[in-house]
Image 1 (cartoon, rainbow, N blue to C red):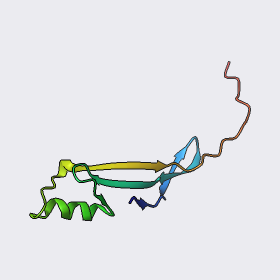
Image 2: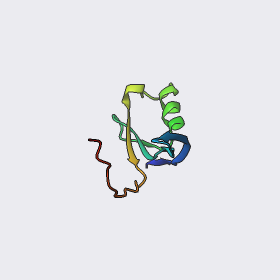
Image 3: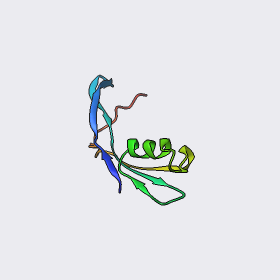
Length: 84
């Protein structure tokens, strides 16, 4: 079962004299044990399985799939100045 890490504005930067938000995108993470097929609900759960001496799980057995959701970008139209 995947878990989500929410997106958020980190800070603002200046681009061409305009203040533009720098954004950390929303992600959906699926952690899977490649040997057993078990899915983990968090990084901690996967780490705990690796540390558990009662399981044969190793760090390299954990696969991390990440789906990134990029925010919509508002594009506008305009006339470019002729630089000649």
